[in-house]
Image 1 (cartoon, helix red, strand yellow):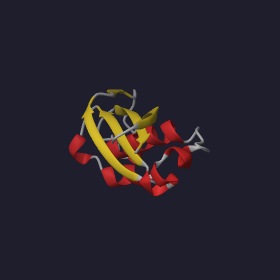
Image 2: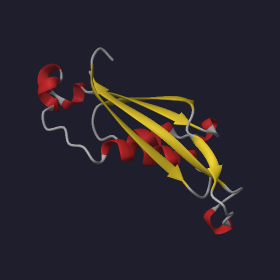
Image 3: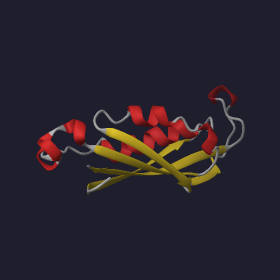
Length: 119
C-alpha cells in the first residue's frame, strides 16, 4: 500500500465453539460498522472506489490454520483486500462448556483487528 489514509480497530469474540473465523469476522465488523467515509473517493487515485486497498491485520490467539481469510474479506464491500495474521488476541475461559454450541472446551477466542484503508 502506497498511502494509508486511516486505520480502524476492532475486537471480536467467539464465546462458544472456538471458531477463530467467527471471532475474526466480528473483529473486522466492529472496526468498520460504526464508520462512514463520505470523502474517500476524492482521496483515491482517479477518485474511484476500485482503487482503494484494504489491509486487515488480525491478532489471533489459537487455531490460525483454521482461519478462513476469504470469509473475513467478504465483510469488506469495496477495494482490494489483503489479510495479515499474527499471534495475539486472547483465549480465556468462558466458564462453561456448551456442547449444543459446538464447544470442544471452555475457551472463548478474542481477536483484535486493525483495518488499514488507503491506496
